[in-house]
Image (cartoon, rainbow, N blue to C red; front, side):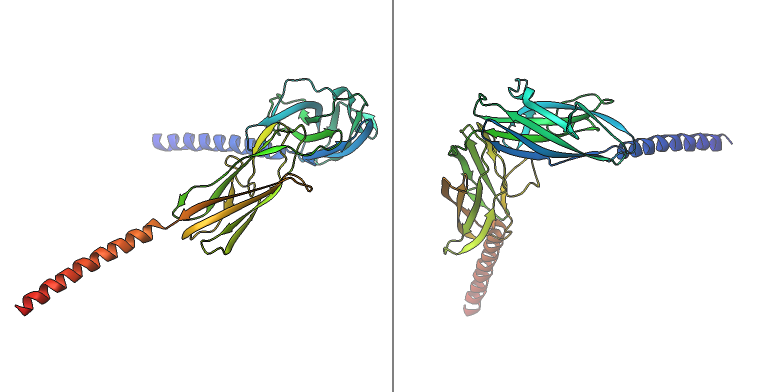
Length: 315
């Protein structure tokens, strides 16, 4: 009887824990927010006024009020992450978020509701010719604000604005690094491509890596991703965005044998300039080498034994 009572209490306890866990998961799943576009690129020559569209949607099941914040940011590290800056944004007074033509500092969204907003920026004549990077953050009034690159807790999201003011200058950048491992046993082959933008304006390089074998035959072509490199920052350029923590360009060839060359061609803009650099790497499967050596040793031992037996038979 006592054992049955203990079993019943344990069962009720597990049911209670399970119900709490399910309630938490359902509650978290019911919260959601999306914004489009995630990045807005604007190029203007002052004085002017520019307007861009922003779409925000409440994917949750409850009506929510979102405050609108504008925060400048800068590049953090070399993998495309951003961090908010405490420096004042000189043009913040010239930025407005409009709802049906009316400036707003917050927006209320019903469940599943999508709302079209306008980003309006007035660019005065006396503005400093430069790039300005900032996020428009929508954050629930019921959640605690925590600064991050793109999200603010569960009910917060940001769209990033890359504003370039002034005539486009010739891009200035340095190819900081193009490298890979000198020796490999097998593929895939990771290439590191790092570009240092020393100019005052954002650049979006376009490039590819051409791989040739020891006979000069083209055996691989790798297109680099289009990434925005902010002014005065370094960024590693990957071939895809599958792994933000290690942004490398990956040649996914598996079997490698011999000497290879890899030539990078990277254009900073449609009009150049273009960087070209060639590196070499050698590949040989050590496991195959070990097997060949073992087979050779066994063959030598067997041959010596056969020769020994042959000599004994003759004597």
